[in-house]
Amino acid sequence: MKTGGRLLYVSSVYMDGKVLEITKNLPELTIMSGTSSANIIISADSNAHSTLWWCESNNVRGNMRDDFIATHHLQLLNQGNMKTFRNPLGSSIIDITLTNDALVGSILGWRVDKSH
Image 1 (cartoon, rainbow, N blue to C red):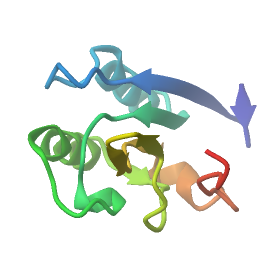
Image 2 (cartoon, rainbow, N blue to C red):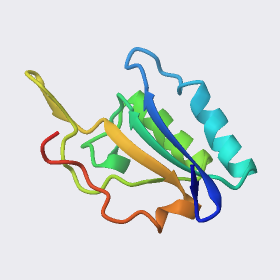
Image 3 (cartoon, rainbow, N blue to C red):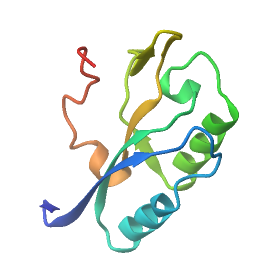
């Protein structure tokens, strides 16, 4: 897909809660977008807690996700503390949406759907 003459990669990523490492293809996607001047939107089930996306504290996976976001110059679109995951044991914010620097200013009205 193209936006403003640039390629746009849209990816949905599940990060296994039992695995600490970042999904193998995700670094490749961010590198590819940087070398080809493409834009990216990544919707991820991070299975991680980070204060970056309004959790009360970080866990090990959250620290790893924070490092990945900073290293690859990604921008978090999540705003506020609306929970994205609920089960009988509780709720948390584990679903995040990321984009690159070039696209972040063009994304308007992004939000967590209240019916989620």
